[in-house]
Each structure stands twice: as C-alpha cells, then as structure tokens.
Image (tube, rainbow, N blue to C red):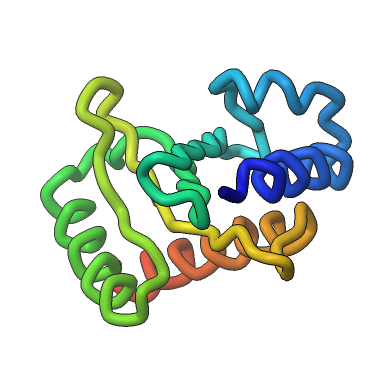
Length: 131
C-alpha cells in the first residue's frame, strides 16, 4: 500500500507551489496551477501505486468540429507514447488532460509538478502543430 507515498508527494507538491492546505487536496479539492485546475485522485483499491491526475484545460473552442479533430490527433500521439489522454468532461464539457503518476521511491512533489508542466506543455505544442 502506498498511501504514505501519496500523502508525502501531495504534501511536497503543496509546499513547492505554496499551497498551505494539503488536506483540501486529500478531501477531493482542486489545485490551481496557472490557468489550470488540477485534481489528484488516489484510490488504493484501484491501484495503490498510481495517482490519477486530471487537468481541466477549459471549455472546448467555438469551432468544436475542428477542435475535436485536433484533440483526436493529439490523443493518437499521446496513446502511442503512453503519456496520458484528452477527454471531455461529461458534465462541464471542459477539455481534460489526464495521466497516471507512479507512486514509488522516486516520486516527489517537485517531480509531479515537473510532469504537470511538461505534459500540459506537450499537449499545447501538439495542439498548435495540428491546427
């Protein structure tokens, strides 16, 4: 069971970004990083070694057909490299990028933040390249 790793990583992440309430995240709250809301979902019964990370990228652009085509192309590349996936939230219809973060001895708050920044950057660059 990696509950202690999960708690350690979230507490470190909060410290790195200056968020003073890790309990908020443990209770299902979201963390704002720049323009994005980030949800960290840990379910040790599903997989005790993985943290599910969901990043709210906001509403789908007005030209939904072109946007969806772009997102499907990005998803194709993301799936091929196992870097996560794009999806549309069923209630808010916001675009979400999600990935799994391995909770092991190398996991840290800084490494998770680096992953968030890198993955969001990759998705943005791929979106620009395919539009």
